[in-house]
Image (cartoon, rainbow, N blue to C red):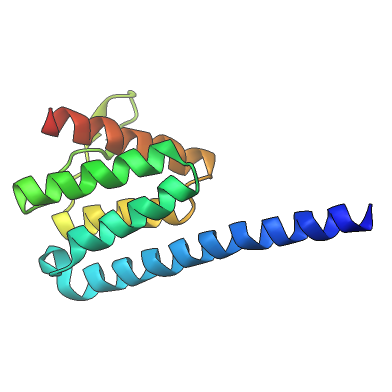
Length: 135
């Protein structure tokens, strides 16, 4: 029985390293976008690298959103995706005006805690909006 516990502990450590590496890369991308905006020369490659982490972590939603994000950036040289809405007192939704850099930063920060229920819903909104724009 003690041997099983050690094996499980080792497996869990390797999973934690993947997540830590992905979070470190995500933090690097966020810092780069904060400093250089969408003009960051390696932004698309960085997002592709993040997507590889999401594949390893077996998170299809994050994997898809990252792919759609770098495809959108590649095609449009912008991130004017309308995925954020606000609601007035009567329950009417209207789009929130946000610049491209802040919009991308918002999505990247959602990905930092992609398991959170509310964040996942907003990530799904981005996925839907990106799909509408691209296809």
